[in-house]
Image (cartoon, rainbow, N blue to C red; front, side, top):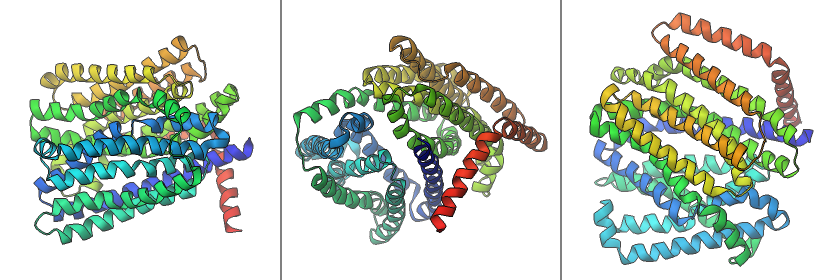
Length: 477
């Protein structure tokens, strides 16, 4: 148990480090892309990625959500399950590819991309999920080194191929950016497609396909709702307030969601261990450790909110007009924290295969977000959309808590503790936001919070430092 706990912590640390490195590369290379592409070509290339994200929800059937539970239910046949899962998603994606080829002209006119790019998109969707299956396999086997290596290869390969192909397609550089963005993942997908198939030696098995579809299909509306939840606000701001305000909101929102680098890394390390503990009914272990993760998430969020104005200046020193976007960051960052919290309940729902509940809550949150935006943006401006986002994620947190605790009657977490910490984080976040124009006082308040946190959790901090030191020492030997 102790060794496994150590692996969870070390995995989390390395996931976080690699995520920061990858996001850092993305930030550094953005000026390269903007200097090589016109604003029109830049938008065209990024919109293509949005189409990939949307169509992937359908073509992969969201069966990736079944992997965590399948690791428990098919423990001794996990490779066989993954191989069959790959067979399911690639078969359906191939059918969609055939339909796309038949209606390629209509799709080209609708999506406003050349026919060859339409075909490239759907060919990519047949193969690319295999990379995610490999990542999930390594994650649930605590093989974080392989997981991180894949992410780094994709990151570096994407940047290198994008730049090279943009130079090749001189007159249509957006094509070079599009192909460069997907070719590395596609080639890795081919490699893992063959490797997973060789390892599992199963393309079709009725039991596995039915199992995956039962969990995955209800997650399709959930995934679509999350896309809407992330995108609808900026579309409404553009239509109601104008392009300039939409640009400011997008800039601030994009910066605020950098916090998800840390929260996602923590979640990636936590989920495999959580599933194992819940399967063994060790709920007290879950509650004890999850409290630490709650504190960590709150601490990271508060620190992020504190440094946001200065970080924006550092990242955009020559774009003073964008600095006003700092007011978007606190509510969106707190929304990210709420998202981090509600994912805990989603994990329980996935474990017990109650995916329709997840879909219903996500759709409801997307509707709430739309209605609030419709009411708030015309009256209060684009910044209000950040607060409607926060309210929507708080709604998701509350909804998932109610369904997990009272509908499913599962008590897994220290629920009161989580909600109290969310409330405290909200109050502190709003206080720091009100001090954005008083730099010295803001940092004094933040330091006092840091000291209080360190005193309260000193035993956990020392324990974590000890584990990392031992791990580093072991690696040197």
